[in-house]
Length: 125
Image 1 (cartoon, rainbow, N blue to C red):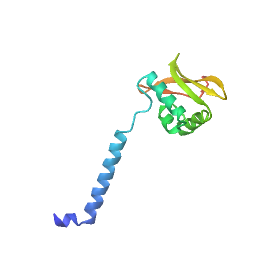
Image 2: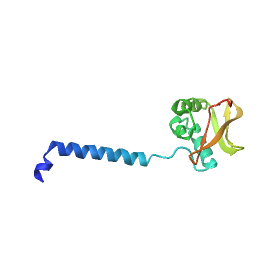
Image 3: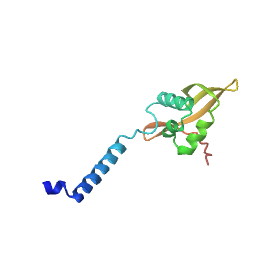
């Protein structure tokens, strides 16, 4: 046993197995994209836009990834997000920009049993 504990190959094997186990556990605990309900999705999108945090917005998107999340969050950089609600199949974000109130609609989709928004306009053909 003492010989095994002083063997470099043994410790390299323990390190490799431990590293693989840590990666598997982290992937298994990774949060599901989207939200369970449209109302929960509306709250999460609103909070992300209020905070101008594209990292928080990215897992709520159906398509586009980081680039679309960053572009969407940047649109609200100088706006004051007041609230967001789920209405008529979309998240409606109410905001004020330069004293003018406006709404921003994000269509809601279901992917893998979770609700996500699709801020990218895709022509149907």
